[in-house]
Length: 483
Image (cartoon, rainbow, N blue to C red; front, top):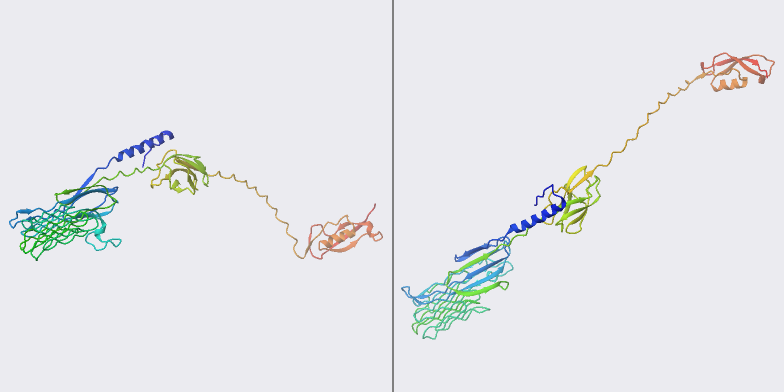
């Protein structure tokens, strides 16, 4: 991730980021080419390294076995194997199986030489019977280099054919060498007093034989060449045919009846997958092997988003504000974070612009960061911040001082009366007031000759406000009222 200075202004910040990205891209550099060679006969494995999408293979098939004298002197030579070079697409982590064929064994005396084994690269081990998809291991081959044919036995036996060629016929005899492999299968076995065997797509055929006398052995490996024909010296054997595609044919056995040599075994097949490019072939007498060459590609530079500014950069803690983010490398960004809290919604407006809805937060300043498609976050930058502001505290409403409530006047005790003031009122009025207060009118004294409507209460026997028992009497004294 890029580390950008906090003191840079926005324009310089983006320019510095672009320069840093260019520097990273140039720092990757070209990867070194790697080469590996397998020479052990039999099966080895190779795992395709990371960032490798193709491998160039050079496979060399086994040579056919020679026909030699009992003392080891060369009589007839076996055929050369095939060298096949091709570039084939592969996948990182893929396991490839390298099958190196062996050279054909030499035939001593009248025995024919063995055919050379084919060398191949395949995607399924030769040790299993059925591979993924229900195919056999031979059907998973990507590249095969055919083997040469074995030489025919006896002094007049034929040379083994090079890969892709027929074996030679014996000198002065009617026996013939085996044919080369064909596109669809093995070649034809050579004719003679004892015919050679036909080749097949994978292996060359065995040379013709007339008895169980030991002959030169065929090559090791799943795509071995045919076995050289053996003989008891009574008949001449025909050469074995080469394996399918480019296996070399075995040489025929030599000698005239009743004295003859065994035919040489046919060589293994050659093949290149249709997806291969840069295919070249040649005959080779080099040791059977597979050499592979590959160059890992430079991995892409992973650039995180670069966030420069947030506008507006201040808002309430309740969130919901829409802000605009500017910077670069925003394409396919996955999320926007405000202090670690994901924005509820955001939209990519282009390579350098994003709009986002601010999430709920707490008062304070937080870093705003963008999560890129590569899983990297944008670097912390001075302009990539957002400040949450708390809402203003409400102004408190003053609480009024409560007015004390006067204590209520206790009601008069049950069964009592409070004497009212009835002075200077008429007798009728005084009577009503006393009764309303649960008091009773007692003795009334005063002028008798004056009508009641012309008199007023002059004096009451009990002062006003006096508490009496209910029904207690208050005496009244009257006086005449003058208009």
